Amino acid sequence: MARKVLVTEELDPAGISVLKNRGFNVDVKLDLDHEGLLSCIGEYDGLIVRSHTQVTREVLDAADNLRVIGRAGVSIDNIDLDAATEKGVVVCNAPNSNIISAAEHAMALILAVARRVPEANESMHKGKWHSGDFKGCELYEKTLAIFGLGRVGGLVAQRAAAFGMNLIAYDPYCSKERATTLGVELYEDFEDMLPLADFITVHMPRTAETEGMFGAEQFAAMKDGVFIVNVSRSGIFDEKALADFVAAEKIRSVGFDVFENEPCHNSPLHEFDHVVLTPHIAASTVEAQRRAGVQTATFVAQGLSGSIVPTAVNVSNVPPEVMDKFGPYLTAAQMLGKIITQLEGDVPQHLELSALGTLSSADPSMLLAGALKGILAYKNVGAVTAGNAEAVAQRHGIDVKTASQVPSLGYESMLVLETEKNSIACTLHGIDRPARIVSLFGYSFDIEPAPQSLVFEYVDAPGRMGLIGTILGKANVNIETMQIGKKEGSDRAIVYLNVDGEVTDDVVTELREAIPDLMNLWVISL
Image (cartoon, rainbow, N blue to C red; front, side, top):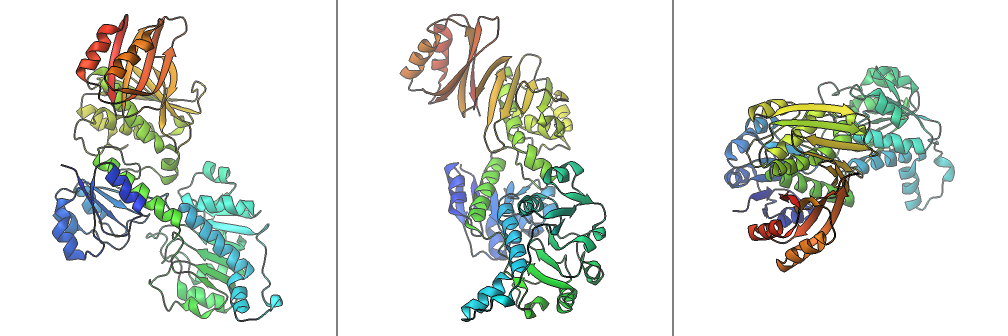
């Protein structure tokens, strides 16, 4: 029976299509109240929400079949994460879906307040031409203080650098290496930055540490005439104190997209014509909404199919910037795990995982978690994480070893899995591209594996591929792509065929009997 996914809020049609194309039954119920959700949630394997649906402990207690919750956006404030974790329900989000939109909106507000665009626009619409009334200031060589140098803050830094701004930042979780790469000077104490900044932009979550972070004391310490922008979270600024400092002209202008109470109709900032206010629209772009729908649907489908979910917030302690850089290799590691188990014919007893090139700086336990998830794909092992990977391996009798090294055989990065009998390696030609196998048993080639493949090892001689193609053609099995690998000084060859069509036991038997000097033949399913 096909698994069922419930969608309770607007999701881009492309996201719905992702789920349906993967064989899931999808019910879209946009008008469910709490009682309605309680009454129906028990029949669903997956749930996709946005910010309105409250996934409480009560809802989770009623969700007997639920395995994955997808939040089509970033914040998960409306989901009881502790209750979900206790019940073994994976909660994932789409943290990258709106980061470009948010960064661009931050820049839009910075430009709007600096050049007084809304005021000038309103004046023009009233039929006036008062060009002398709207003198602004340039961004060039002004100092921008970025509070929070994560995904969005980093994108803002890149865009602000293009305007020739001097960049300083505060983020206790950001490495010096990342800040240096972004061209940002990192400060350990955020209050040291306050008197230096001509512009301030905030990209931090609302936590116990950041709530009320900016109040009267901090505003007083700022440079006269500073501009402040917030497209992040409410509660970080004391809006009443901020309005007082705007009125006193200590703060020249403000650009705000988030408010303490939303919908917001009476913020203290409403009284100022030169303050720019937008109704929480930083993520409201066509592209961001489509990304959120597609990414969330993809992650939910992966979770329901037993795959590692890269954005799972309750099974991963990997920092966002690390996940951005190395997360795609989780899926690659899982793919290698699935293949090597099929090559072995059983769960390997000894496994060595090596991360090469730029991948050598990744946490090997994170990659090991992906490989083990693939190796044990046929078992219901639950979540495999960086924290429990070695324990999972031990529980299933797998002796594991990890290694990291900079040399990567000419590739920027490589991931290698080795057992006592077999070895396989892959790389990614760009983090948004599927993984490609570049080595198998020491044979070098380069191919993106398909859902179904045939792998042959034989003594190379003329006519071998013609014979294979003839047998597959008679069985209505189409060869989609192929690669032949050889070893220097060896007469052996390996052939990796991506095929479309049913490869029956009879076809495999015929291939084994027909090919001279055949040493190995495997059917690989992903």
